[in-house]
Length: 91
Image (cartoon, rainbow, N blue to C red):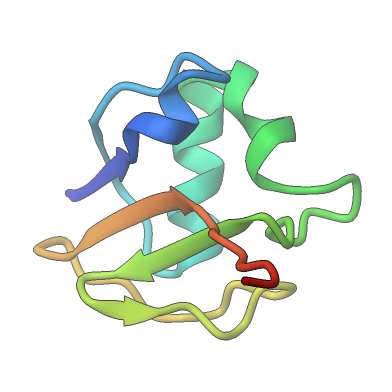
């Protein structure tokens, strides 16, 4: 099973404990996680199911690029990590 983890900054906004779920693609994994913890769904994905702009998702150490389809293949030994994306400002 794939381990899904959330950064502390995300945990402040929704209940999202580390949890193992099954799935072959990132969409499968996130959907399974949201079934177990539905309160975090709207924070991570928008009404179309796409990953929100303020969220960064990694499979192991690789940033997910397909934010709409979430078609990235996920192995049982992988770790999906969800972070609140950071943005910079003028100095």
